[in-house]
Length: 184
Image 1 (cartoon, one colour):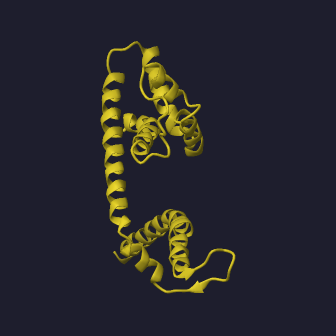
Image 2 (cartoon, rainbow, N blue to C red):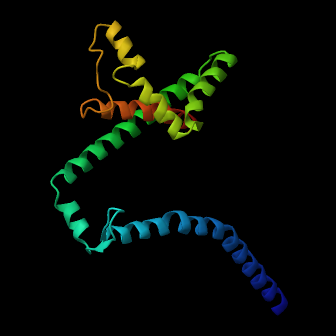
Image 3 (cartoon, rainbow, N blue to C red):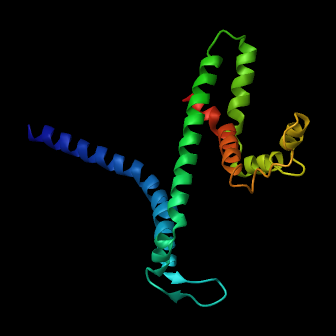
């Protein structure tokens, strides 16, 4: 009887050890790439430093300046509005396209659209930003060119306008991520 108890206990210990062994690499990576940079950033926020002069400790003065700035509330509202728009657009368009791709289209057509919708998701964010920076360019971008052909204002400053840049961000983000939402 006691031999069975020892076997069960040793089995539980081995299972616990295996669980910790599987968790350890992820935990170490999380500590190195998330926790340590966050703590280092907070420590740097306690100094007044411009890389040319020696750092001067100012305590929480930078944080006080941040939260006393009247523009911060507007920044949070803009960020929340943009985030909700992007998530809603991605989920809605992803669901509609997933339903369309699940319909009775010929296999070759479905596979073509699946690849073309998912491809932007696997492209790096740097490449996506370069592509959309070109497309949204005020002077040379094809988007403004085609809008001009349709009779619209062909000099829209998509990237530097507080009116148009949120829409440009939503379009680029939806283009990049809708493939993921189709799969989900």
